[in-house]
Image 1 (cartoon, rainbow, N blue to C red):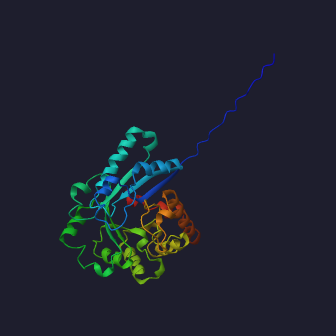
Image 2: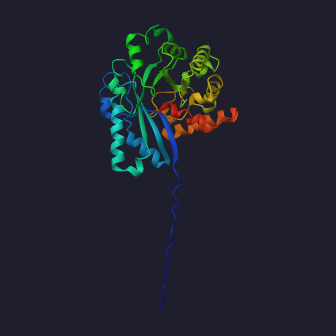
Image 3: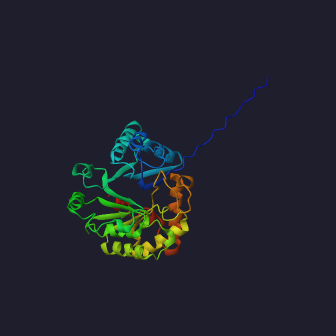
Length: 311
């Protein structure tokens, strides 16, 4: 009688550590949020983008978001979706603390004097408020548009750790708004201050914006930078100019701006170029270009200013 022994091969599964990430600019919203504005927009709505799906997709790819800033979405009339995301994460952490316990979520709400009340700004996870002007031309910003009595009262309601967040595609539009903001208000400017790479790094209005930011000393320019240019080496030229004019401590690249709505300067949809993982790869590439040229640590360029965003 012959006895055959089969030896079972045991496989050792090695769990690689997740890569920790900060997402200083992302938008979470549901189909319910979109239904509120579906009849008012002249273009197709984006697909819903939930916090849960975003986290699961990144975690399954080996990326561990540790600090996330849910920024006011311009098409929505308020920031109810930001407050709802706080509850969503709380529920996720209650259900699976091991998976979601390392995530810290903060939010930036709509910067409107009537909306950004003391009560809303007092929420412990609210870190600031956002002015959205998109492609507004500079001449559309009146001399006292953001410095009248109502706006000055709003600035007084901002707490010491909170900031004002400005988005305009035009550098001069950003500059005209910034000059109306009290000098003691901390400011973050989206998309490196310009979405017009064709004007180059010597555009007078952009250089003036950097000079104003430098003089104030409490202005940061924020990524991810692909709305400045979808080519990392081109975006790196703008970041290098910011570093030299304002300082390496005034840049915050690590962001996704998910869910990547709109088209780039070449007419390509951002959603075709990016998902959240690819957006992180993009900012890594930008940081490498800048680091090689200026001997600045990559980590400083990516997230060195994140403590200022949510201290």
